[in-house]
Image (cartoon, rainbow, N blue to C red; front, side, top):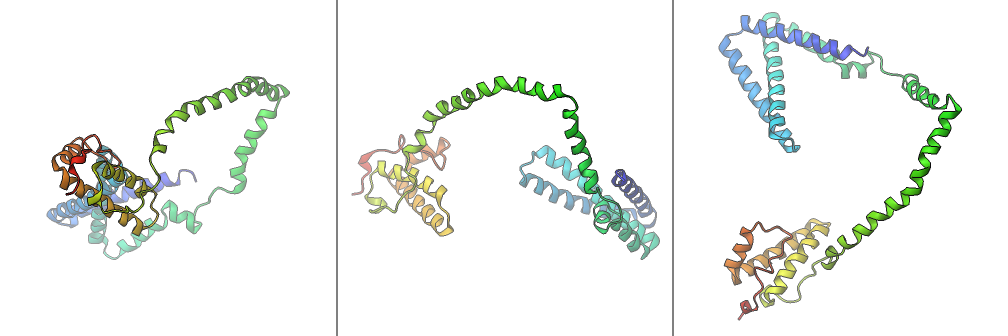
Length: 259
């Protein structure tokens, strides 16, 4: 029964072709064209949107949408052709196709599924093969012995390389506490530091209310920096500033203290 899905697909494609031919004879060509175009367009757009949401490339999403659009449009056109030629008997044909589909047939027990004995046959045979001769048991031990002696060296080497790289993130605090003074009373350097610390606090926030408070606080930092030095802030933003970026080298002038 391994070829059942292939047989079912071939049968449904044959029925779809017959239905499309019937639609050409029993349904006006203008209706066929409009129906095929509408169903294909809607299906293709939906498939393309879902594929892009799954981070697929534009080319892969396009061809997947084209294939699905053609398949669904052809199936709908075939159903219309059978309905125009055979009437209510089309419902019985649709039900037969659905019931005999591989997933439904397997669930209804209409075709056999692999038994546990069959699933265990291959692993049992594979496990017995390596133990057929005594030499096969000893050979892996001789080959693995040098690897055990070298393994500790390979595990210790990355630890020395990762040590220095882990130091820079530790310089920033894990959270940005509520400021004791308003942003208008902070100097430029403190505002820049608060901006960087609030990014880490936002990453560690666990509730929506906490995130909203941090976002509001970050917005107040930007508003105050823009009020003091709009040109410097714009120059920093134009360089491709990131949410975790440091505007200190662009905005760090104590002469912008509030009056």
